[in-house]
View 1 (tube, rainbow, N blue to C red):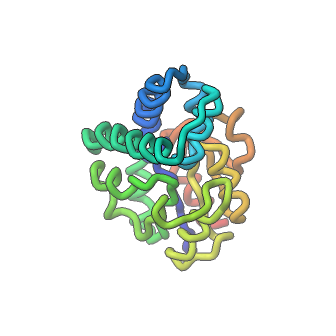
View 2 (view 1 turned 90 degrees about the vertical axis):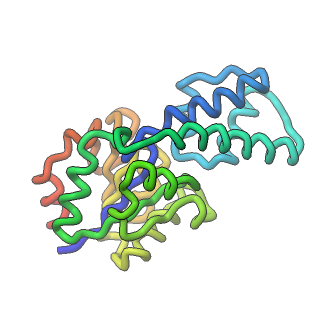
Length: 217
């Protein structure tokens, strides 16, 4: 049996959410807008354009198209300066255990992330060679909950969507996996990710036996 296992990046393989938070907070505060960690949660799995639109609406601010583009670029520059310091110590616990099991058992492994910096991050944490396919923000036109990113990953793996499994930490990502007719595994809170087929707090709760059962389904 061969399944395709598609991993989101932020909050699943590495915790870059903290760096997004710092970069968005710096941008928002620069505009005189308060920005909380709760608001940051609402930006998970959301494109950079839509994230900035949300922040501006929270602060009742409007920008010219030129200012909007400048701020998006500045936010990304700030974010890149944070992730430039990353190394493999930032891989979340037990992610390598699951990746190695899937590789040893010749399963399909892909990345399905909205991040345009996904390849740079995977290189920083020395995981890029583990993935047979990488679909990121540079390859898709529709943001999650649209299933495009995961359907493209399935196509790249040459595996049917119904034979794919998605690891996601955001509501939009779980909805995208469900829309793609894939098995959805939420990484995080059961209260937040209740639409997922399965939910675990993190990969330390995912046993090899569970993965074996998923492969056999």
